[in-house]
Image (tube, rainbow, N blue to C red; front, side, top):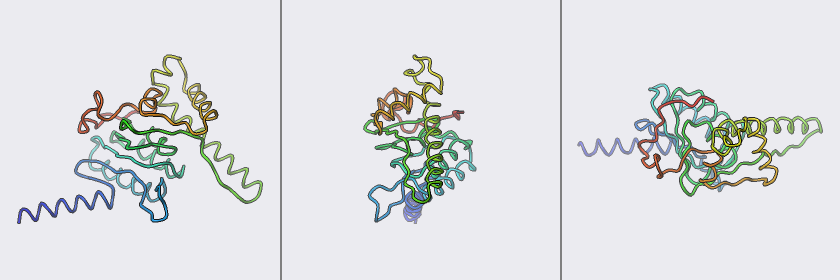
Length: 229
């Protein structure tokens, strides 16, 4: 009987992780796109954002100890990504992100909301200006371009706020505005700016590598305080 109870508990936990992307017991969330038959690369969209918001608010309502988010996803919708970003920023619980594989485009922006940003050794980060596809009148196209430019400016600010603390920019005595200008120049030169785990850490887009130094133990990665930005 006891064996059946254990098996039932494990089955419920497995269902919670796979169906709802959360492990309430260990305070871990799994952030990835929904699996779609017509998409090889599920990205950040409405369903991912709403599921994440519910999971974060649930854990935050239970207590305010550290939460670990496991992320493996590419880019996606700006507004859905910012819904995730702001959910993290306004949570009372400190949040650690662990990136598996990549944090590219919008997922790289989301990463900047975390109190502790950890990458696996073979991950990559990619930054670029947001793109749009519009049709309609010249006025509607102009409006869409203005909104996209504002989003790109906000993106640069979010990266710069965290990066300015890194040694690379501290040694140059850069302000947030100067750091954002530097990042923007890189994007204008490269289009898509790819960084290895080490490069991302050097530029201040991440804090450490999983399995190295003080980040060697997964169970010790729960940050104990919020990073106010």
